[in-house]
Length: 169
Length: 169
Image 1 (cartoon, chains in turn brown, purple):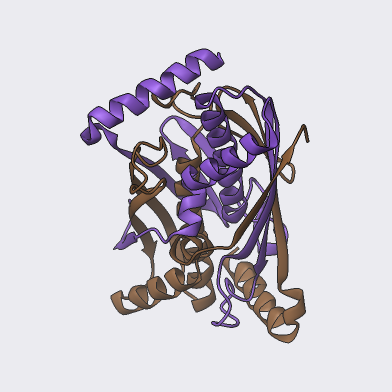
Image 2 (cartoon, chains in turn cyan, green):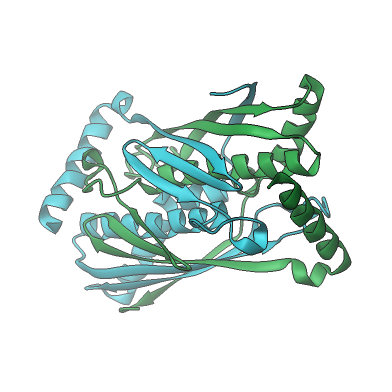
């Protein structure tokens, strides 16, 4: 498994090095609010349900959007650890991530416009069970944190252009 | 439904105005890589599966982390439209969001360190079917974009502190 994953990674790196024009990719999501704060999301052929907990006015049919962002960061860290460890020849027995995000709800609720709407802090722990020395682990962490797409998007602003269209989709 | 949601929003705003110390909240996620690039995520009592598509070395058991981030942004926009429209007394018949994120995979794969790891552009359309004039819609969009938590986190860097622990969780 890991040997074939290592080959896949190296082959992809070589392909992208030789043909940078092949490096651009587009990912999509579509979603619609179906009841209250519940949103049904489609990503390719995958479906997920997003909702708010009762104390935020929702029906708790799924994680809320900021919990989903934590989920995206946790999984992205794990995948990036697995990919970079594999590329370096380090065997990963297990990788897991615990995250917490702190928010001041006065931001979202528009009660104080000096308070940001999102998390003001995210903290987390990555547990990595792998055959590596402390020096290799430190090098791996630096590589992962420099190449984790979701961490990148929380650290460096992403240009987001949203247009509002009046009427049904 | 909308009347009771409106009361919930106004009551929450009043509570947060009177007791800013009650405004802080913490959200959490836990996840673990279970096979290949597949991550099983737990958010409270909600479970979700994240994976990469085959062309990125995964088994396609779920959306990948950057698709999940788009899903989080889409649902967050919808919920924020619903909440602010409701607070303003505007009836929302339907709100849906289509998003696309553009990425240069040389960033994630470490092929060119001048290329960022995440999306370099996110574009999207919000379809809003509501009883509102064009001027009200423009005002609503400005309020939503100023108070949407996920959009905030993509626009203004979030301090993220991750520690790496050697060993199993």
